[in-house]
Image: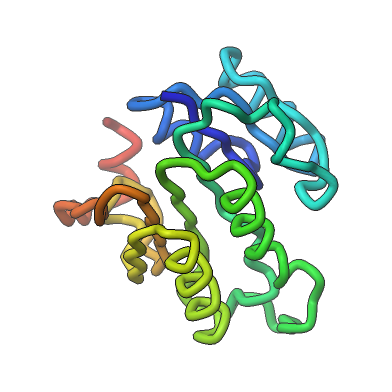
Length: 181
């Protein structure tokens, strides 16, 4: 049950998914993130590359069950006072769609900020549905999934066979409690 981690950063999504799947490949453009990922996930092939430069139709990604990723959110983040929807990074969400169309995995999982403009969300959901995926997208609080942060995240799951969406049991604990285990 192999998973491809796009926009992997230092490996947050990969850590969670590796409990249930084999995260075989992680791709990110930032060398520090790739080094951190490789150090913490020795079983994963880490590739430092711009996702836009990769063709997923090649046989390298055959057998991938899922594609996961958290494309850069600076273009949409409410914390970025200079955010600009015309920022080139805003289009990186479409790279998740392109990878999905080329690989045709069983499932896709996308995580991002809740403040992604509605038209981006609608376009992504509609495009995935046109590819034959059952899509569920919601805004959740990251702390309900065990994060030490209380912040709203937009989560999208797309599955070819059926609707699947994680139903968290809210577990609001302080950062100190979470870090203690």
